[in-house]
Amino acid sequence: MRIVEPITAEIVLTDFDAIKQALTNPHLSRTFDKRTYADGNVREGVVSIMHGRAHRDRRRLENMQFRPDHLKLYEQELFSPILEQMVSAAATKGEADLFSLGERLAIVLAAKRAGFDVDIEDQQAHEDIVAYVDEFSQASAIVDAKDPDAIRATVKEAHVGFHEQFGVPSIERRVQALAALERGEIGEDDLPHDILTSLLRHRDDPNLGLAEDSVIIREAGTYLQGGTHTSSQTLINAVDLLLDSVSGHPEYWQQTKTDLAFAQRCMHETLRLRPTTPKAKRRAEEATTVAGIEIPQGALVVLDLVTANRDPELFGEDAEVFNPDRLLPSRHPQWGLSFGGGPHICPGRKVAGGLQQAGPSAELGSQHLYGLVAMMIQAVVRRDPDRHPKKPQSRDDRTERFTRWREYWTIFNNPGWSRD
Ligand code: HEM
Image (cartoon, rainbow, N blue to C red; front, side):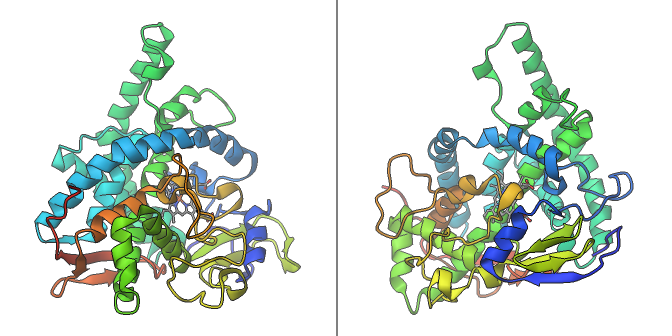
């Protein structure tokens, strides 16, 4: 990891409560690299590395895109038919790389919410946007990259291509829509409901730092990327854990097919055991104290989510085991700290993971959100996938994040599954 200011010390936190305190400590930031974008900081000016007031202002604006009623509509009306169509097409071919399938699925709504127009019937455009997101995902995980300079080089190039192919046309359409609103030709409800439109509407606010198109595109691009790669990785990890469970708990596989609430608990349990970010990181802007531990200025604070998420006092004696029906002895979410916490908590957690269930037999109301990843897991498991005997299931060796896959080939034993 290359950091402009020298790291003065490295402190690793493994305790659940200590990590929660670190995540809300105002002196610990995600700003590792203070160079400008032009000088090689590919994340300069985007929400995920901002800090303090400026970060709060951005999040306040962007959080408005995650209202539960909108999310419900997205799950039921938009995602469900696309999901069936795409998983069925992949299964009919007899084999698929789940990583690529998961990304192509997740990107459909991620692009819509972020505000990048892509016609998914146009196969080339669909493939292009997925390829860009792959590059951006490397940049977003750059603190854990094995070769950050190689990533900086390719990601900068990807930003240029993305800007021209998707960014500029999407901005133009929204600028025109906003002008039409101004002239009274259309109403509020006719505007696209997405991050890009929100950012454009507020670009004159000096507190938001959104004057340049390139920052706006990279900011909305953070939402595009944040929702895609993580969802696909969690789909794979869930299928991987479910396949491992077949010998000991064949009922998990069957229940995933018939019970979406169970599929959702599989998603949460998967995230607990295999967070997409196994070690979150923070940098001490000033000397501070976390749970009685002194942190000097300039220290790198490593938050070991994997260890914290397996604390037996919080998650039970079998905390190391994949058990979607676990009854939590604590009030913590079943996914532990895998969506982060504090000001940087994942804004897309309800999109991907839905709402927490109060327990395996809790009644779920009609407005319960199951999350897109549970829907993906169920649609895939219904086609009875198995690990491909001839094609790889390989981890992503470009990153220290052990929970990330580069490809995960499966065959489908029941490609013809149908809802009827
Ligand atoms: C399984 C799915 C997901 C997982 C595991 C996940 C995980 C996380 C985590 C752990 C963080 C905080 C990192 C830190 O504090 O160091 C985060 C932040 C973020 N996530 Fe997610 N995420 C997921 C889905 C999504 C979705 C669906 C979206 C968009 C719709 C999204 C957008 C973002 C953004 C923009 C941030 C940065 C927020 C900020 O820094 O204030 N994520 N995510």
